[in-house]
Image (cartoon, rainbow, N blue to C red; front, side, top):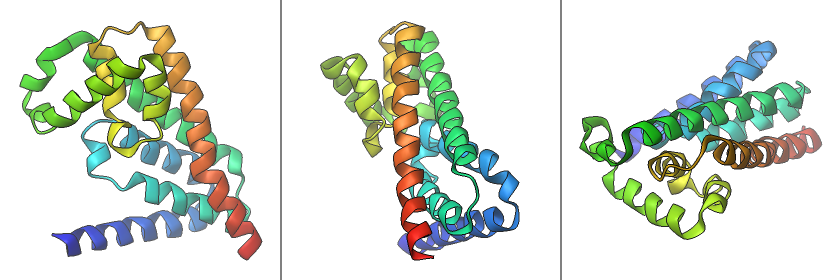
Length: 178
């Protein structure tokens, strides 16, 4: 199983690298899809999005592709993924753990609920930077009936910083090295 994961991560990283180099105008949608997969519960456990975004940032820096489309794509993808998770939590509340899709993630959802109840709206911001909570915090903030606008403000502000950190630092390092 571990060999499969290493193979999948390596192939996914190589695909992002080669595709971005061959098609620099695809950097926005590639960043958006990767960030969405990192922010949507279920997909976030399957897709190594952090590694892929760092690889994307490295390609952007090494090739001189504009940083703005990559950052905007990552922001929009992550915000949309979180909005959908918030909406699911807001509309289905605690019935979520009874759905087959979410039953596998019951422990993560429970941890996310405790985390959100402890930190409140700051939990959305902090959770963006903590791998295990990244996709569950928006879901549990919806389950906790947090209003849309406070969620959106915290979600968007954290997405901006998160996208810049994950893309700009590798891009800067690659621009110096290559």
